[in-house]
Every structure is written in C-alpha cells, then in structure tokens.
Length: 202
Image (cartoon, rainbow, N blue to C red):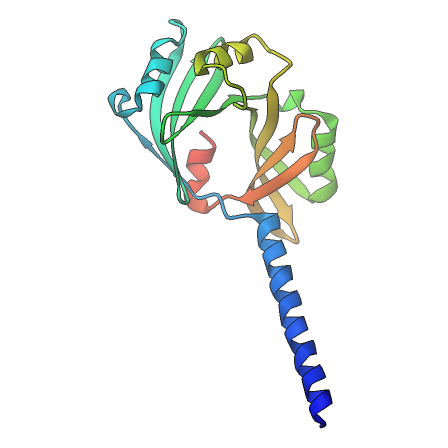
C-alpha cells in the first residue's frame, strides 16, 4: 500500500466514523430522553411566594387542591392541581415560581381526526391512556389572568396536546408521551420509564 492510498483509506475511515456519530446524535435527538418523572406531595407553605399568591386567588369553588414538587431528569418544578367546573387542571411552575404551562384533561372524543389517524397509521395497536391540552404561558399576563383566559376558552392561546399512550411497535409494547400541535401535527414523543407509570397517568 502506497502512502497516498494509506492516507485516503484513513480519511475514508474517519469519514465513516463521523457519519455514524452524526446518525447516533440524530437518533437521540429524535427520540429524546426517557420521561422519568418523580412527584412528591408537599405543603403549600414551601411553595415560592408567587405560587402561593396564585393559589390564594384561585376561585373559591375549586376542589381537590393539591401541591407537588416534580423532578424530571435534572429539571425541578412545582405543580398545583385542582378540579374546577368538572375539569382537572395542572399548573406547572419553575423552581423560581414562574408559571410555565397549564394542562387540562381532555376527552378522547374531542381529538382531531389527524391525531386519531396518526395512531391508526403508525401503530398496530394504540391505547390512549391520558389526554391533556397544554396551554404554554408565552404571555406576560399574571398567572391568574392566564388561567382565566383558559377557563373562558380564549382562542389566542398557544395549545399543544400531550397524550400518554400504550403502543405496539414491532411486536413490542411501549408507554410513550406524544406531543401534537393545536392543528394535530405530530411534534415528537418520549418513552415513559416504568417507574413513572403511575405518576404520569394521575
């Protein structure tokens, strides 16, 4: 083998390695990290002051008010959960007390046909276990005003759909969290770790 051929072969080998690395990174980005949430019940007094102020201004007729600290990988957050007007709400705040989003349980019959078609087309079996409308807080209004706009069904809010589903793929069953846009377009999914099964369905 000449020096020229040796150099060319070495460059080709390095190029192949780089391609495999790139493909590996792409695959990880596509599937994301597994959802490994842990949730702990906490008392109101340990919440950040901004969250306590939010809670104190909630409608007097709410039911099942609960407070939690959630850990998902390296991320920590607080959740305020309650039932109001026959709907289940989950309000997520950052560890600093900033409202990030509000999720509301949705019934399967209200899902768009495009979301239903996605599951029928991509999986041999799909059982939808939990459906939530996620209202992303990208506004500058205070948390209680943001909640009021959700209750009044404002059409100006940014909505995603989060769906926990048990799906069958290549003869194997997976528990996954799927995200869709307000138009029913598929955004992505994360596998749900077995240890998070009970928590994510609550």
